Length: 130
Image (cartoon, rainbow, N blue to C red; front, side):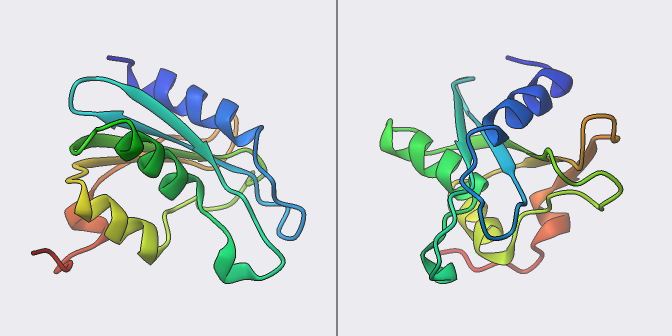
């Protein structure tokens, strides 16, 4: 499996494929399946904002479409967020992470920013599960 720095680098690379003409907030994500498989995604905006897709959701949905049902880690990076708190997953993405058992979430705001590690319990306590 890739180390945390390599996962963040892959998320930054994925952000280069972002389609974000409205927010200019390019985000990339990497989902790591329980078998070590790597899936990437980038945010894709739409003029009708609810139709947009976050990078985390794109990466997780790609993993799921390849048969993965357990995701250990999601790494998220924004390449345009120098000085920001990072590209933290939205509530919808956090709930998607809960659906597939994500245990760790890595977040980075820019090229030289520190990588913050969180559990999903920290980011989404009392989440809805079946």
